[in-house]
Image (cartoon, rainbow, N blue to C red):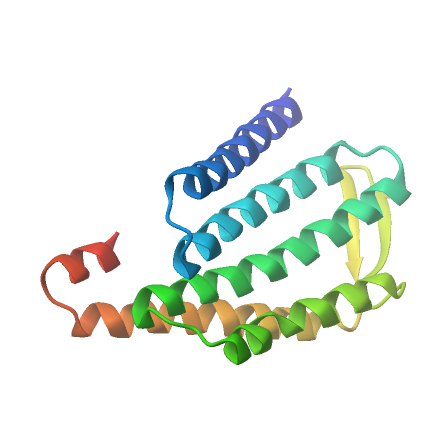
Length: 172
């Protein structure tokens, strides 16, 4: 029963994130910040879907695929969130910066195609499936922490420097 409730919450969270993404695209302006926010919401939804499907998969090959999917989408979350924060705090991100910002995702995608780099194997335990991580996962963790940490620091610094409405926007 507990698994059903967890998976139901994951499904609802996935649906809410994807709806927020679609609403942001439909109602938002076609600006870089709006698009990066919508993409970030979409990838959070797809990451949540990947976790739910990993939990539901009875076949270890399917579980391996969904594990790859939620690793890849979490990398995209980091990139799109940092992109959004850069747009929100600086209002402009050059094409070269975007290229550099998203380049790690191409590397992650290629490495995910190589067996054993991020995920050595999926093992069935009495409590459920366990993902045994590969050696490259450490580098993924460093990338993820650096991007998310950079975004948090940028938000904090801009919050400290801002006044009025801008400070209120950054607070929420």
